[in-house]
Length: 267
Image: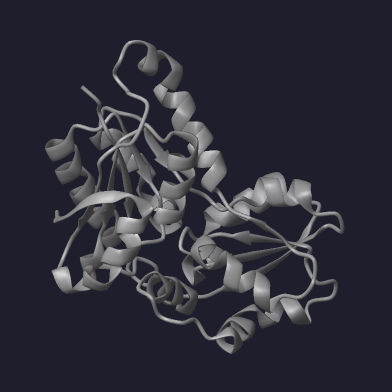
């Protein structure tokens, strides 16, 4: 019998991680959970984020018996991982801003970090920069508005380019202007095409999706699981789970169906 993995986020941002995992592991069944009732996590107290994350993960683990959990939210990952790993007896993968690859990719020693205000200021982020980009100038831009714009985009709403330009303006004004920008929130890769269109300069965009997909593959030992039949090649019936009112997902249905979710249900 195929055991799914759980991908958890406060909203739809983790769908950028979902897409990377499915690109690499198309035969892996996925339960995606969006805690719409708690969205957004960024402005909430850390204790509340931890409580919501662990509550949802416990319910998901009891109901779906997953083989692995990915917390596809930078805010939740940086503060909830220890508790989640204590709570669950399966691997728990977190997401952190891709500072290390950005530091390696920059040719001018200047990178940008585009994340939520909480992630930009968090001590965990400071440590990542000290460890992996100490040789770089790092320009930090925190935006909660961009999170909502990504949610709106997936619901079919048009994103105003001028609004994106205003959010990115600290990068334009910087001297030097960074040549590599870290998308430090899983929501932001959903707007990568729109972001590219408002920055005319040659820019490298870096996020954590591919690295997370690699990590999941290694932890699950996919080759062995395919050999013994635990995982089967081919299409899977992925499930999108949400908390709160169904009104929060009604206008997401077209995008979710296009991504391959066969079922949408309440947590």
